Image 1 (cartoon, rainbow over the protein chains, first blue to last red):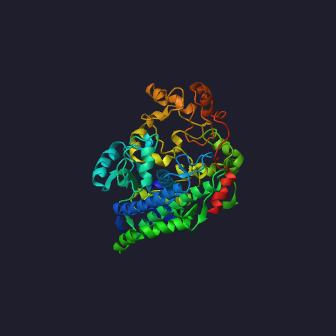
Image 2: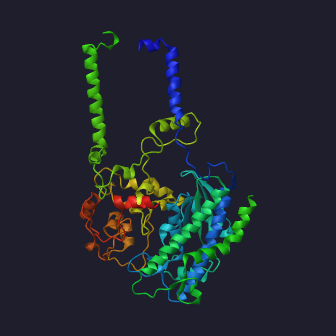
Image 3: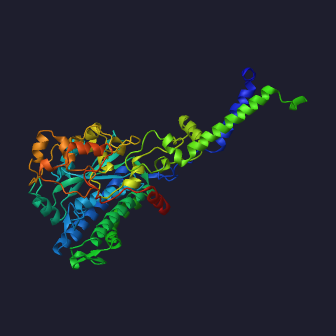
Length: 276
Length: 238
């Protein structure tokens, strides 16, 4: 030790060698994500959330009108307890959205999606705090609201959720636990809340968000078809390329997603192309 | 003679060093065995986890130890954006969900990330599994009180309430411990809920269940958590 103290040159060499040894491994590679590539951020988080929210509007309307609305006319059942073994039914639109949100959270894209209202069927879905006050404005203007959730460090957007189909209105008005019985077509029945951790996204990042949402719709739809496969007493619709409007049919997941893409592609493409 | 002469002191130092290395290698070897995991564990595993290996939850962190040290020094010096895990990766909700994710979960953790649950999660952080299921305690649920429903369901209204003592009355009297006597939190049991309060599961049986004892809701569940071999199969599919 005495020798070491008296040899600053030796200490220097040991330090340099240690640094070389430490650096020679190159460290742990940085995780690759949409933000760590050389690709530039071209979208604000608000633009992306607005884009995916529009896709959600189309999907929900299609599911509510073409599957739930027309399906009911064919005798298909939809229920809030659709996952229970003794209930042979499909998911109601709000639970379809919950299924999409759950699927997204299982994937790598850090996108949060929630549905709430000031008159929800289930009181646990009632807005509180900041969301409650922002929703008052949304009901009047039908315009989105954006804020930064500081406690979770998440960029948050709320979009109006409209009564876009007669099925929304009649089901909510007639539900035994409804807190409001005079819903009309076009009313702001609630709002979707979306969250994302970054303030801006690359082109690929935006496409990842859109794909995560699309995959979510497929996942929950496949779960619905799986439930149908397990029906014991109810008549099973034929799954293929036909829709309930034509009889006891349901579209396959590919046909369903294809229709969503056809309906929403114009708006989405317009925004995506505008970034280039 | 000369430089190769071994003095008795050097000999003792050499033998001592050798014994030390052998003991050290033996200790490392012993604690590396799967059968020794219980000696490394911080405590007895919770219910259902008794048979699983450490690595199911405690995966090795990326890179070797030198790389991890270098990366964290770089992070401390501001050269690198993110720090890295050292030794093993942090255990997160994602780890739990790899085996316990279920489509019928009544209270999935992600739901509580929504801003409107901000107040509730100050009282009970339901965004993470370990708030209620702290591991290495040889139990099922680590909460001391089972009145957690009060954080979100104060305004609950049940139309055509089937229970002889209505939910509204139970809530008004703040009898929050009665909820769990009918409803399991995650909703995975196929269980016929009684309509008379007297027929519900007694609290002492619930307490035994939370501590790791017999399941009072029955063994009929819609989904079961994955076993270690089943979990490994899911990794192989990826």
